[in-house]
Length: 330
Image (cartoon, rainbow, N blue to C red; front, side, top):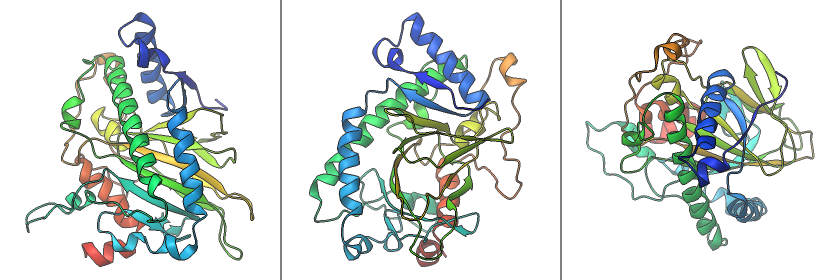
């Protein structure tokens, strides 16, 4: 394979109970088993994407001082602005700056026996000079949550389960995240690591790329460029689906290479995650699928996968943001 597969999900959205939608569900399952990455078309998110992209561009044009006033280092919830080069993957600097959001919630008051990952819920930080950004983020996250729910139901059907099999893991609602990202190298220094090789920790990830390439996927040792495709979202698996299926579905490694000096690459990443409290045990796959499961853990024993959603997400947040870890979690 030299390119990622393309999946049209329009039937899942408009006629979820017809034969064409069922065929799409099995296509989705096979893609998630073999590649773990694909292009999604027919997603119905074009208008919300256009609006959010415009506000994202406005955010990155703000004066540096206004962006840095929202520094993520001031949020125990990992919400806010990451300065260029301040996030780490594999212990190395990622040459991107970004703005992290989650569902807008009050901070939880934790007791001494409460898990630290409950701190992942909380309020966002918002730039006062861009009041419409908040609306654009909320509308996009609402639309993507609906899309993630549709695809999760389809995936359950493809796996031989009931369409609502995963719904308890999202009851009353999952804990989604959103990143507005700008990849660029500083005037001096920097490296080719936009973001290093990693697995996503949640359920499903959806990425909207601009026209500048750089996203690469490692499928069975072969590196494939996820070449930007107009009007398509890139979708990939997270580690919770790997745990749930005993490795029949895999969280595929991927990275982003830095654009050339003087060039910027912008993307929007939405992470469709179950609720933080959800605990995943292997699901009852049909025998013909179960025999193809490769095990829930990653190949690297130093990168364990935890079966509680909050614990698995927090592990990467702490590694990526040692400043937040030292301030709020040590």
